[in-house]
Image (cartoon, rainbow, N blue to C red; front, side, top):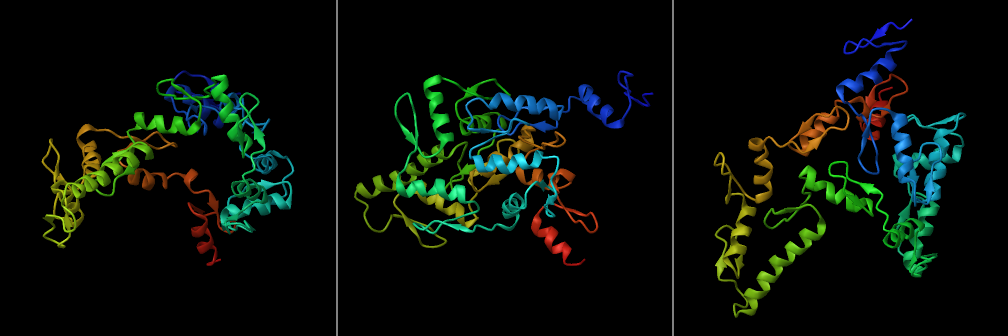
Length: 346
């Protein structure tokens, strides 16, 4: 007997969960996202199979689900979550562990505890293994050597990333345009071309960039302008004075940029509606109202938004964004601090 029937194609299923999975074929919904490359899948099993394609060249890979880790300590803690006998359960997020020490290590992610201190600089760490890796910064030790060129690295994951230079391997593929990259961070930077995200904003003029190197280069331009003005003979007091705070500048352009900080000046006008803004970054965001661009997508329901703050508010409506459950009454929370505050009333 198959009481659960798909209204699209008439196919029957024994259980409702199987029908829900099947309906994604018609809706196109792909709720499971790969953390490595951003590719999405209809089923968790397909995601697990896909993850194994990223395992090539990774130092520490879970053979059960294909997830990879930079350090063996992370892998060991993760593998404990696959154990069928996990008697030690975290009350904050519900994860279970086979050994009490694995639970104790995991709980530091909620408490923020960092018991391991570096004797050289005083920096604190949640795990001894991470401290050991950090101490190589002070000692200069580079135990992982490239067999091709002899270059040394502090971490095995850095060596594996370096070896892709010799092999030409580019395991991180963009799901939008199929372009491949050697490093995950290069893929993330590239994906901003498709999303329109420009998170690096100049505090002086509001110009925004997809990566930090673009912002650094731009900031040098402001400094060089001031230096050129000073070297041109206008030493000491600048000839262009701000009417609001009496601060002076060597160039008129720098004064114009400065005046936007007082709030009265709004030199950036929208060509569509005439609305004005203090900096180009705010204007750029406003223009999405006219273009209809919605670069910020919800990973849970595929709704899209024109700014990140609206997306953040929306995501709180999904149960997936509330992983912390009160064991006493079942109420869910988006942050561990909110759960702990709530538990005081019990």
